[in-house]
Image (cartoon, rainbow, N blue to C red):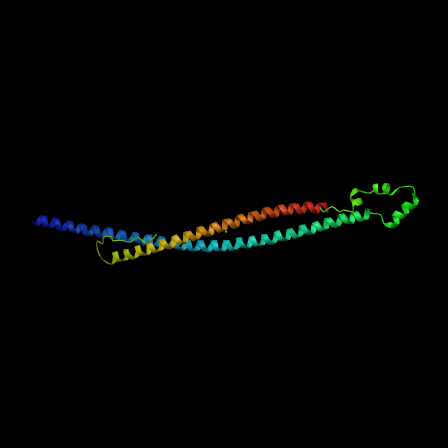
Length: 209
């Protein structure tokens, strides 16, 4: 009986030792997980801040490209006016004055007006100019030692659930910001392509002038 009692007592002691070991390991696990979620929260906050700054820079780039495209449009308009003025000036030089016409008619009285007009370009005859954007884990769980360690584990699990909810919100915000910035980048690419095309067109117009 004594041996059985000692064996039973040893078993209970072993169980207690095992329970304490498991409790300590569980406590350390909840601490590590809580620390990891805190790091994730910090990384998420830093990422949102960086994306916000990046979004501001992209917005400024888009605004600057808008100004550039507007300047190119004004340059094209000025080139059109210059091209039109140059052609009109050229035509006006080709057109004879009244005194020259009278002089030619006096020197050649037999020549008809039709013959005189046929010597000038068709454009001069017509007088026209060519213009070129989980809830926290909850529920009953078994308390073994029912001491301060398990209280801390419970607090850590509560904090874990709360942090997971915050991380989820951060993830959604980051995805939203990335989608908006991808749209902005696409708009910038379109503006750059348009600016390149407009510059090429302006260069052609400038060579004609």
